[in-house]
Length: 163
Image (tube, rainbow, N blue to C red; front, side, top):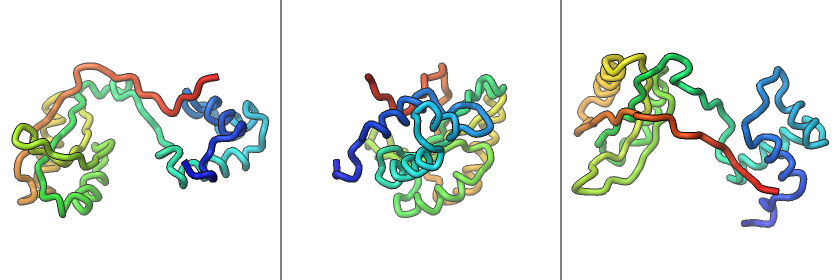
């Protein structure tokens, strides 16, 4: 780890204050600042530095899709040309029903898929319609796909620090 990315006591306080997520209040950075005993501006500045140095990957919402009524959650997996993944990812990631998409390595011959897009629907039929929309956008780049349905909710957690 580079010297500029070392975690100091203030970073640790910020991480502890955000381990369970940002507080659900109108001014979350002010609440974190109060708990960490620093200014809200310093919280925002340090979190920006943590993003820029890769100490944290992103700050975002992690919804519980089941609680929102989306009972069918499917990871659509696609075999697309590797040299088209970035452009296709921008198109597919912009769809309102895709929560996230990314590239992963293939494991031939058993696993030909290299592009993944998570979709959420009220039932399997809705997810299948969404997969058809993705297939239409991919066109000839879709060399095969499947849908892997969630069977349980996995606990999603952010950065953790002890002590």
